[in-house]
Image 1: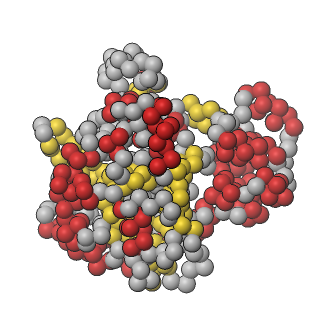
Image 2: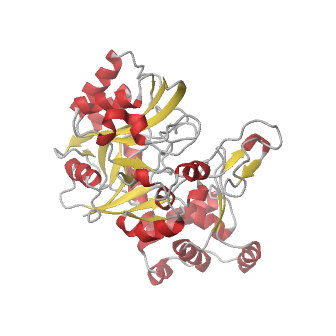
Image 3: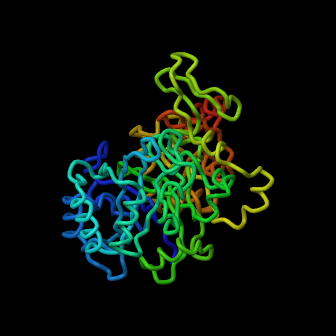
Length: 421
């Protein structure tokens, strides 16, 4: 069974998240995207967990399904936790995604945190004063098959290996429980190829998730499995064993799209390529320290050359870089991806062709031509698949800008005044 899984999202109870997020809407958008396994997000929040219990059927395999739901998405209990604490005279800020197989385990875990003085009420992604090692120990004590996944591991501010508050290794971060860490989340600003330069990460399987704060952004990164039994145990064992037969590939941003790929200072509109200016750490405008991005941090910890990575790349789980369909449509018709016209075209294509992932990754050019009348959109999809795009890299919290067509091509496309239908 082919499974597209997004294991890290948030509820409306997390800060800066859409108020439209509920389980029915998540199921609806999973159908649009082509996701059939979705993390619940925020299982530490009592109200969100209560809603979940009221709305789902326990499938008795570690997954859950909404009652009377025509969509095929299953849910797995997941939550992201922000650990902020002092270690080795440095303040650490580490985000960790935890998956569990039952509501009973989640309730025990939440009680353990509350008993230790953690405030789980204020935010769907709670901030706690426990170390990553301590948190891992609590989760494993409650459920030995808890999946503990360091989130967006390179992000400067809140991650296990980030430049601002992270460590230089997973072992340093998780201590005696590092042996129980099987998967690492690459985050939007890196892809697996970048991570392969760091040999200390070879012991871990690399996963990708959306970390979505809205409905439309679920699945912007995801994982594709081929499961036989479709159960929590199979997910657990696949990640633990780095099973390439069952873990087919991850779906990735082009890493330049991520908000922290380059070094920079957004207030001063300063973006710097650390591979060209690796000694520059101070903003040339305001003279304050730059936010040092993911590319620099990976370079700092890397111990392999491009040739060495090329020789060993086939031993790792594969990946596919992808641009969202709305961004592609926006490029093709030269409008913002958030415009009403792009929305209209997007939903018409979904209606006529299929799920977003199927359109972006699987449908042949001929199949797309039978349902999409605007050949510029089809050409944009083909270019994206071939990696024939340009991205102005993101930095210091600003997303990168995808460019599929040159300015001359955009003028030509506009002049043709093509319509979708």
